[in-house]
Amino acid sequence: MAAATILIVEDHEDIRTLLRDVLAPDYTIVEAVDGVSALSKFHDSQPDLVILDLMLPGIMGESVLKTLRKTSQVPVLVLTAIQDKQKIVELLENGANDYLTKPFDIDELIARVKVQLRANQPSQPQAKMLTYGKVSLNQETHQILVADHELVLPKKEFALLQILMTHPHQVFQKAQLYETVWGEPYVNAENTLNVHLSNLRTKISALSIDSQYVNSIWGIGVRFD
Image (cartoon, rainbow, N blue to C red; front, side, top):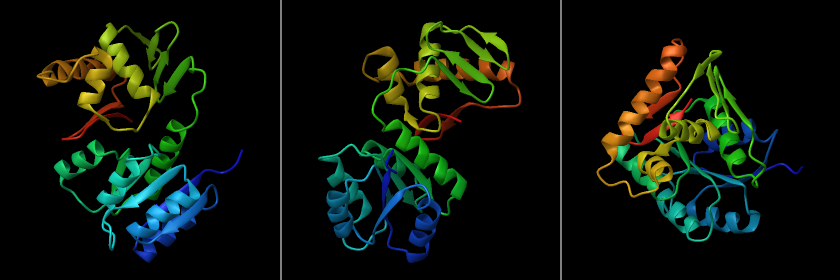
């Protein structure tokens, strides 16, 4: 199988070199130093993933993201020094799949790259078992084990856990989770979702007190770690 192609869009040479050195052994790397060249090289290379810095000369990263989303759903992992949670929420709403704040941990970057590439692979037959840490979920029998203890969940809580475990480490917006599980618009529903997430978190923690799996990312959403 051919190696996945990653487009790195970063004007800071040291960071770009670091990313290339870390990822090149496993992936085909294409580099761009500004927004204009990023769009050109995206068209030419058709990458499987874009690692996008926001602070770029010329066309800013936000504009690059919006332009890409007009024609492509390729995964975009944003690198940013921005700490403003509302700004990060806007990025996710505008099409970013995930983000890392600078300075970032290399191991976490590699893990997030793998998650995004795996999520973008052509659909495969649904895996029967999902297992992460001490949590196992059987998608056929709906049996859940936490640290070898059986956990029985109501339908909505099971569906939430299944979504989160299917895409570990991915941040899900609360509206996205609610609308997928409940099948209705996320209007005045935050309390309902929070109660279900809290119940799910409490039940898992009661059986695995040394681990926290369902994590809220303040102002953004929820992910399974």
